[in-house]
Length: 274
Image (tube, rainbow, N blue to C red; front, side, top):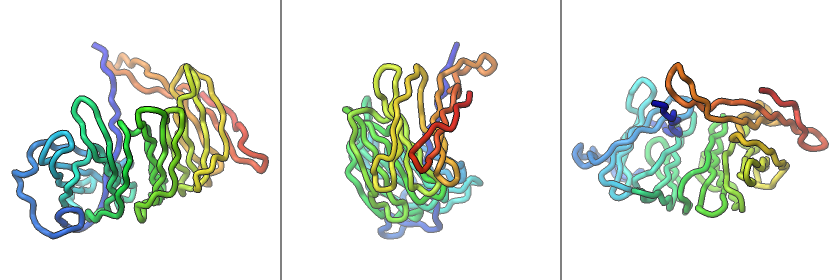
Protein backbone atom coordinates (compact mmCIF):
# COMPACT_ATOMS: atom_id res chain seq x y z
CA UNK A 1 0.00 0.00 0.00
CA UNK A 2 1.42 3.40 -0.97
CA UNK A 3 1.98 5.78 1.90
CA UNK A 4 2.38 9.53 1.98
CA UNK A 5 5.56 10.75 3.66
CA UNK A 6 4.73 13.49 6.13
CA UNK A 7 7.56 15.89 6.87
CA UNK A 8 6.97 17.51 10.23
CA UNK A 9 7.36 21.21 10.51
CA UNK A 10 10.13 22.33 12.85
CA UNK A 11 10.36 24.03 16.23
CA UNK A 12 12.33 24.46 19.55
CA UNK A 13 14.35 26.63 22.02
CA UNK A 14 17.17 26.93 24.71
CA UNK A 15 17.96 28.10 28.28
CA UNK A 16 19.16 27.22 31.74
CA UNK A 17 16.43 27.84 34.26
CA UNK A 18 13.17 26.58 35.69
CA UNK A 19 10.35 29.12 35.64
CA UNK A 20 6.63 28.87 36.34
CA UNK A 21 4.10 30.59 34.03
CA UNK A 22 5.67 32.75 31.36
CA UNK A 23 8.55 34.06 33.42
CA UNK A 24 6.50 34.23 36.61
CA UNK A 25 6.92 32.50 39.96
CA UNK A 26 9.31 29.60 40.33
CA UNK A 27 8.10 26.17 41.32
CA UNK A 28 7.73 22.56 40.30
CA UNK A 29 4.62 21.64 38.28
CA UNK A 30 2.49 18.75 39.44
CA UNK A 31 3.30 15.79 37.22
CA UNK A 32 -0.33 14.71 36.88
CA UNK A 33 -1.65 18.14 35.85
CA UNK A 34 -0.15 17.98 32.36
CA UNK A 35 -1.01 14.41 31.41
CA UNK A 36 -3.81 15.01 28.88
CA UNK A 37 -1.59 15.18 25.81
CA UNK A 38 2.08 15.60 24.84
CA UNK A 39 3.70 16.96 21.69
CA UNK A 40 7.30 17.35 20.62
CA UNK A 41 8.87 20.04 18.43
CA UNK A 42 12.39 19.99 17.02
CA UNK A 43 14.53 22.87 15.79
CA UNK A 44 15.37 22.97 12.08
CA UNK A 45 19.02 22.17 12.80
CA UNK A 46 17.94 19.37 15.18
CA UNK A 47 20.03 20.88 17.98
CA UNK A 48 17.07 21.32 20.35
CA UNK A 49 13.95 19.39 21.27
CA UNK A 50 10.90 20.80 23.03
CA UNK A 51 8.36 18.64 24.81
CA UNK A 52 5.01 20.30 25.51
CA UNK A 53 2.62 18.64 27.97
CA UNK A 54 -0.98 19.83 27.95
CA UNK A 55 -3.48 20.16 30.80
CA UNK A 56 -6.41 20.32 28.36
CA UNK A 57 -7.40 19.53 24.80
CA UNK A 58 -7.92 21.59 21.66
CA UNK A 59 -6.11 24.65 22.99
CA UNK A 60 -7.89 24.74 26.34
CA UNK A 61 -5.99 24.73 29.62
CA UNK A 62 -2.35 25.46 30.34
CA UNK A 63 0.84 23.80 29.13
CA UNK A 64 4.28 22.86 30.40
CA UNK A 65 7.34 23.41 28.20
CA UNK A 66 10.49 21.32 28.66
CA UNK A 67 13.48 22.31 26.53
CA UNK A 68 16.29 19.82 25.92
CA UNK A 69 19.42 19.69 23.83
CA UNK A 70 19.91 16.94 21.25
CA UNK A 71 21.47 14.70 23.90
CA UNK A 72 18.31 14.97 26.01
CA UNK A 73 19.75 17.25 28.71
CA UNK A 74 17.11 19.52 30.20
CA UNK A 75 17.82 23.20 29.58
CA UNK A 76 14.65 24.75 30.97
CA UNK A 77 11.20 23.91 32.32
CA UNK A 78 8.34 26.42 32.54
CA UNK A 79 4.56 26.70 32.40
CA UNK A 80 2.27 28.87 30.31
CA UNK A 81 -1.43 29.69 30.52
CA UNK A 82 -1.49 29.52 26.70
CA UNK A 83 -1.38 26.04 25.16
CA UNK A 84 0.42 26.21 21.78
CA UNK A 85 -0.82 24.60 18.58
CA UNK A 86 2.70 24.74 17.11
CA UNK A 87 6.12 26.00 18.14
CA UNK A 88 9.10 27.21 16.12
CA UNK A 89 12.56 27.55 17.65
CA UNK A 90 15.52 29.62 16.51
CA UNK A 91 18.63 27.74 15.43
CA UNK A 92 20.58 29.06 18.41
CA UNK A 93 17.84 27.92 20.78
CA UNK A 94 17.34 31.37 22.29
CA UNK A 95 13.84 32.13 21.01
CA UNK A 96 10.52 30.28 20.83
CA UNK A 97 7.62 31.44 18.65
CA UNK A 98 4.38 29.75 19.73
CA UNK A 99 1.11 29.90 17.79
CA UNK A 100 -1.92 29.68 20.08
CA UNK A 101 -5.58 29.08 19.34
CA UNK A 102 -8.19 26.33 19.24
CA UNK A 103 -8.30 23.09 17.28
CA UNK A 104 -10.40 19.98 16.83
CA UNK A 105 -11.91 19.29 13.40
CA UNK A 106 -10.55 22.67 12.27
CA UNK A 107 -7.71 24.92 13.41
CA UNK A 108 -8.09 28.58 14.38
CA UNK A 109 -4.94 30.47 15.34
CA UNK A 110 -5.68 33.59 17.38
CA UNK A 111 -2.35 34.88 18.65
CA UNK A 112 1.38 34.33 19.05
CA UNK A 113 3.63 34.36 22.12
CA UNK A 114 7.37 34.99 21.77
CA UNK A 115 9.34 33.38 24.62
CA UNK A 116 12.93 33.52 25.72
CA UNK A 117 14.59 30.17 26.32
CA UNK A 118 13.84 30.50 30.04
CA UNK A 119 10.13 31.09 29.44
CA UNK A 120 9.89 34.87 29.70
CA UNK A 121 7.23 36.33 27.40
CA UNK A 122 9.00 38.91 25.25
CA UNK A 123 6.00 39.82 23.08
CA UNK A 124 2.42 38.91 22.22
CA UNK A 125 0.80 39.43 18.82
CA UNK A 126 -2.76 39.03 17.56
CA UNK A 127 -2.51 36.87 14.42
CA UNK A 128 -5.70 35.33 13.12
CA UNK A 129 -5.40 32.50 10.62
CA UNK A 130 -6.41 28.94 9.93
CA UNK A 131 -2.79 27.86 9.79
CA UNK A 132 0.79 28.77 8.85
CA UNK A 133 1.77 28.90 5.18
CA UNK A 134 5.53 28.63 5.51
CA UNK A 135 7.98 29.92 8.09
CA UNK A 136 11.71 30.52 8.38
CA UNK A 137 14.47 31.80 10.65
CA UNK A 138 17.44 33.65 9.20
CA UNK A 139 20.59 31.55 9.54
CA UNK A 140 21.95 33.96 12.17
CA UNK A 141 18.67 33.52 14.14
CA UNK A 142 18.05 37.29 14.20
CA UNK A 143 14.81 37.34 12.18
CA UNK A 144 11.72 35.10 12.03
CA UNK A 145 9.26 35.12 9.12
CA UNK A 146 5.79 33.59 9.08
CA UNK A 147 3.50 33.06 6.11
CA UNK A 148 -0.15 32.92 7.13
CA UNK A 149 -3.37 31.57 5.66
CA UNK A 150 -6.18 33.74 7.05
CA UNK A 151 -8.75 31.84 4.97
CA UNK A 152 -9.00 34.42 2.21
CA UNK A 153 -5.82 35.65 0.56
CA UNK A 154 -2.53 35.49 2.46
CA UNK A 155 -0.28 37.42 4.81
CA UNK A 156 3.38 37.63 5.80
CA UNK A 157 4.73 38.67 9.22
CA UNK A 158 8.41 39.37 9.89
CA UNK A 159 9.70 39.62 13.47
CA UNK A 160 12.87 40.73 15.24
CA UNK A 161 13.95 37.67 17.22
CA UNK A 162 15.84 39.57 19.93
CA UNK A 163 12.81 41.56 21.09
CA UNK A 164 9.95 39.62 19.53
CA UNK A 165 8.68 42.85 17.96
CA UNK A 166 7.04 42.99 14.53
CA UNK A 167 9.32 44.43 11.83
CA UNK A 168 6.72 44.49 9.09
CA UNK A 169 3.63 42.71 7.81
CA UNK A 170 1.66 42.65 4.57
CA UNK A 171 -1.61 41.20 3.34
CA UNK A 172 -2.02 39.79 -0.17
CA UNK A 173 -4.84 38.76 -2.47
CA UNK A 174 -2.97 35.53 -3.27
CA UNK A 175 -2.30 32.69 -0.85
CA UNK A 176 1.26 32.32 0.40
CA UNK A 177 3.05 29.13 -0.71
CA UNK A 178 6.38 29.63 1.10
CA UNK A 179 8.87 32.09 2.59
CA UNK A 180 12.68 32.14 2.88
CA UNK A 181 14.96 34.65 4.64
CA UNK A 182 18.47 35.62 3.64
CA UNK A 183 21.23 34.76 6.11
CA UNK A 184 21.05 38.08 7.96
CA UNK A 185 17.30 38.46 7.53
CA UNK A 186 17.64 41.60 5.41
CA UNK A 187 15.70 40.08 2.51
CA UNK A 188 12.74 37.75 2.23
CA UNK A 189 11.82 35.63 -0.80
CA UNK A 190 8.19 34.56 -1.01
CA UNK A 191 6.06 32.52 -3.40
CA UNK A 192 2.31 33.02 -3.93
CA UNK A 193 -0.36 30.99 -5.72
CA UNK A 194 -1.13 33.05 -8.86
CA UNK A 195 -3.62 30.72 -10.55
CA UNK A 196 -3.83 27.24 -12.07
CA UNK A 197 -0.26 26.07 -12.73
CA UNK A 198 1.17 29.52 -11.97
CA UNK A 199 3.10 31.12 -9.09
CA UNK A 200 4.16 34.68 -8.33
CA UNK A 201 7.60 34.97 -6.73
CA UNK A 202 8.73 38.16 -4.99
CA UNK A 203 11.60 39.50 -2.88
CA UNK A 204 11.04 42.01 -0.08
CA UNK A 205 13.60 44.26 1.62
CA UNK A 206 13.85 44.56 5.41
CA UNK A 207 11.27 47.37 5.49
CA UNK A 208 8.69 45.28 3.63
CA UNK A 209 9.09 47.05 0.29
CA UNK A 210 8.91 44.79 -2.76
CA UNK A 211 12.23 44.74 -4.63
CA UNK A 212 11.26 42.34 -7.42
CA UNK A 213 8.64 39.91 -8.65
CA UNK A 214 7.99 37.51 -11.51
CA UNK A 215 5.50 34.84 -12.54
CA UNK A 216 6.60 31.23 -13.06
CA UNK A 217 4.24 28.83 -14.80
CA UNK A 218 4.55 25.21 -13.74
CA UNK A 219 2.36 22.26 -12.80
CA UNK A 220 4.82 21.41 -10.00
CA UNK A 221 5.05 22.96 -6.55
CA UNK A 222 7.29 26.03 -6.23
CA UNK A 223 9.03 27.18 -3.05
CA UNK A 224 11.81 29.66 -2.15
CA UNK A 225 14.66 27.51 -0.88
CA UNK A 226 18.08 29.17 -0.73
CA UNK A 227 19.95 32.48 -0.43
CA UNK A 228 23.68 32.90 -0.98
CA UNK A 229 25.76 33.92 2.04
CA UNK A 230 25.79 37.57 0.95
CA UNK A 231 22.07 37.60 0.15
CA UNK A 232 22.68 38.60 -3.46
CA UNK A 233 21.57 35.30 -5.03
CA UNK A 234 18.53 33.15 -4.34
CA UNK A 235 16.81 30.04 -5.68
CA UNK A 236 13.23 28.91 -6.25
CA UNK A 237 12.79 25.13 -6.41
CA UNK A 238 10.18 23.16 -8.29
CA UNK A 239 9.16 19.89 -6.69
CA UNK A 240 6.61 17.12 -6.96
CA UNK A 241 5.66 13.96 -5.10
CA UNK A 242 7.38 10.90 -6.58
CA UNK A 243 6.69 7.35 -5.43
CA UNK A 244 9.77 5.45 -4.23
CA UNK A 245 9.17 1.71 -4.52
CA UNK A 246 12.21 0.85 -2.39
CA UNK A 247 10.75 2.39 0.74
CA UNK A 248 7.04 2.39 -0.26
CA UNK A 249 6.74 6.16 0.20
CA UNK A 250 5.94 9.24 -1.82
CA UNK A 251 8.86 11.67 -1.63
CA UNK A 252 8.90 15.38 -2.34
CA UNK A 253 11.47 15.44 -5.15
CA UNK A 254 13.16 18.54 -6.57
CA UNK A 255 12.90 18.57 -10.36
CA UNK A 256 14.17 22.08 -11.22
CA UNK A 257 15.97 25.03 -9.59
CA UNK A 258 15.43 28.61 -10.77
CA UNK A 259 18.41 30.82 -9.87
CA UNK A 260 18.42 34.62 -9.68
CA UNK A 261 20.91 37.32 -8.67
CA UNK A 262 20.74 40.97 -7.71
CA UNK A 263 22.65 43.28 -10.08
CA UNK A 264 22.98 47.09 -10.32
CA UNK A 265 20.18 47.03 -12.90
CA UNK A 266 17.88 44.77 -10.87
CA UNK A 267 17.25 41.05 -10.43
CA UNK A 268 18.36 38.86 -13.33
CA UNK A 269 18.13 35.10 -14.01
CA UNK A 270 21.33 33.26 -13.07
CA UNK A 271 20.51 30.02 -14.89
CA UNK A 272 18.30 27.04 -14.11
CA UNK A 273 19.36 23.57 -12.99
CA UNK A 274 17.57 20.23 -12.86
